[in-house]
Amino acid sequence: MIDNLIFMVINLAVNVNSWKDSLPVVLYGMLGIFIVIGVIVGITYLLNRLTSKKSENKNKDE
Image 1 (cartoon, rainbow, N blue to C red):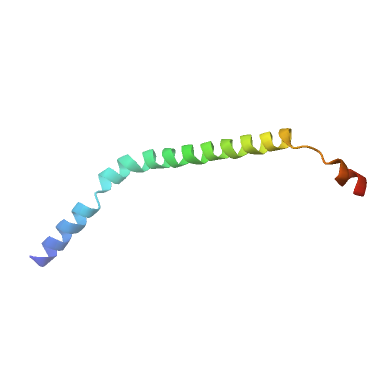
Image 2: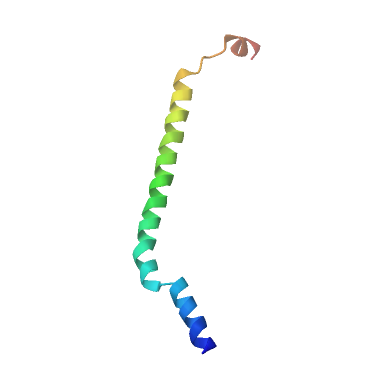
């Protein structure tokens, strides 16, 4: 009886079919998050490079 109860609890806690359905959705979501973060970092880097002022004092010292 206790064995059946433990099996039922484990079966309710981990449903293999729901994992098979939801895992690809989670992976696509995480991939989308990383792509969006990469685009934001790239745009920030590009804007920083385009709007930074060249220091004349720095060039004179070299």
